[in-house]
Length: 97
Image 1 (tube, helix red, strand yellow):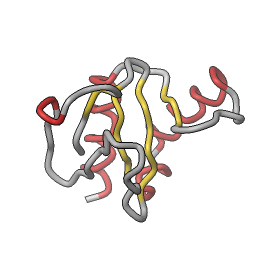
Image 2: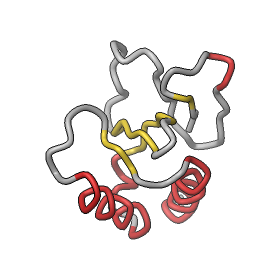
Image 3: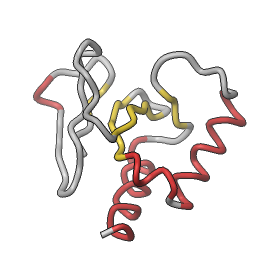
Image 4: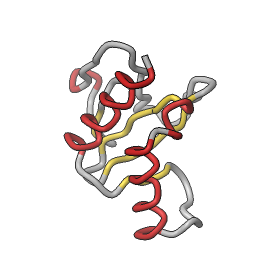
């Protein structure tokens, strides 16, 4: 999964195995089977849909619903910092492998 600040440059991306690219240009399409999300600190990422059923990611989605409601417009916001979200997604990827 590649991480970028919402207004960051191409050089700020880092990638990890088994992950999906994050698109800084909002006009580009999100890959099929992925959901775009933004962490609390503004970093954007696309997460494979298959990970949404993971209990840890589901808990973050419940927290987002409680904090922001179900009527969010645009990209789904996750109420945690990028480092925590990165660890949660990495753990979910390992459990699904």
